[in-house]
Length: 489
Image (cartoon, rainbow, N blue to C red; front, side, top):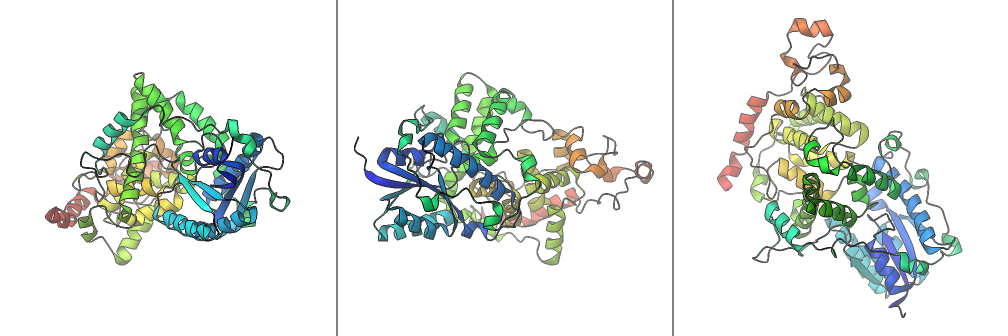
């Protein structure tokens, strides 16, 4: 069969897998010979701490990807070429060296990534090489789903309804590269290098992440198999952080060690058979698509409120705001569930989804600190950080986003704790200094009398912080702070 191009190059980014990889399949179908590359992009890596868990996860996942490419090709000299530098420059140089006619990659929707791809497209065009981007990270992208007025959705429920009415088995079909694997080319001798060690790209191992995070496609497969056995109960268990309820697959979706099509297909099929848990989980995957299309169609959300009126809010500022923010980051707010959630994040790079909402609401609406500060902190700490979902979640919690909770809805951190960690199991795990506090006081330990505190050896203000704000007073202050929004609406 005649191929469109003699040689092509697949540029892996956030799709670190062979199975169901849209860009890889497209390249194998279009090219007689295909090379594969991943670039440790210095534009992304240089600002990171040298022990960033995510870089270790990527590196381990690349080792599996390299092995899987070799297995697919059947050639010992095939595999992954790994570069370290500025991605746009490295791709153009490598494509020129290999003599390819086209570079293939999965489309990215983040503003910085779009600027990178635009620059790369131009530089490749200057040397006569095409850049072909395809959909891979979502089921429906950009403007594929529109309202009756022909505009992007900004409210989730009608978007979800349109998604469910529009999806077909073909949207969820896997891209099978097996039939074309022999088109994978052997690497030139000079490029047959193993995946670089972390030290080779200026990083150090994080001693915590291997214990917390199963990397690569094999890690994704184990988690997916485990979750499929629990999926039917997801709706009942997902909100309780001390219970094994979530899928824990978010980091694998973030770096593409599993495809969104496989996960959506599993949830869609099970939900059509009547599984409530599967339907709830599918709804969460649809939220992911929703936030991706918000970022693609309204890129101003990366840095500004979706609703401009919310940018007029007068947040706390100066040394006072920095002190409040520091206490929040370090899990020293005096509210046990908030502090336990922040401890989980700081120790593992993971935070339960219910707790993400609780701590975000607490920062913006109890402490009065600009939601963008919290958004940036999550971006630094979360293993599964994804700009679209992180931004969407923070804007939802602060009421500044599309289809966000109303500004006057303010989570009470104590009642959230009582409802979702009723026995305090999660709190005691991550705030061990409260281990001896009776169940009666575990959600609000400052309510213990002095005699009770002394009896168990937990003095509030000494062994555990007193609350840095009074929730009732903070609520009134927040309603006043948001009055500027009410006037503008």
